[in-house]
Length: 308
Ligand code: PBG
Image 1 (cartoon, rainbow, N blue to C red):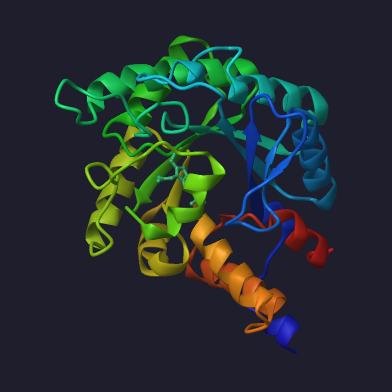
Image 2: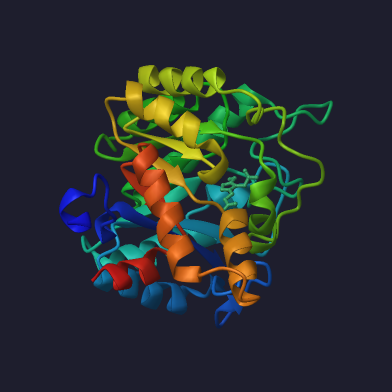
């Protein structure tokens, strides 16, 4: 009866797996604060994407971890930069079996760790960053990414990237706008995952956790600029924002269950304090119930296998 009357359910196709690929490593390296998640080598990445596809996962989102960084994040736009190389390798391996997505942000590639380039005072320069994003979008689309995850929270980034893609003939490349992305302590373990150089925080461009209406405003702006999918991030502490955005959106709305949400569950489960599988399923169904059409989660492949 419960199965018959359930209002929400999980399906592998509605899960997206975020993955890290590290330049220069011959094999996958563990991430201490995210037990079970690794920085992949190109080979281990290809295998893991094939496994995700086999399990029925809807998509993968790639993040690059370069060997060298500079002020403008040159590796992000270099066709031989790790993320673009990995994208080409995965595209050749899996074809259409899974939706191949890439993170479009400079923070992994800059030596100061910010999501954009800096002005003379050391502040993130919004409009100069948009020029970098335009080039990054073309590099990623040319490498074979089908969907670009605009996670940098610069104003006008969706319009700028759409324009650049269309001008270059990449009219079919999808834009996922991290519309409501909050300046969150839940991103803590991600900093280790991408070897982040950031000191300080991103409060100048990410949103204040105190603000709900503002999340909706950001979502509306991204819809007007041409976003194909909207993201709310993190998931667990922002289900109200997710619900608000889902109520007004006429494009799909996704939630990102971020590194800190993953780490908390794994740590408590490792101590035997919670039922790991039930908690994972409950957090995911919670995001779906609040309005997420799909969820990005580091557990995507494992959960997809349970569901099968
Ligand atoms: C920035 C980016 C971050 C995450 C995804 N993209 C970090 C940040 O904004 O500080 C965090 C994801 C996670 O914590 O799992 N490009």
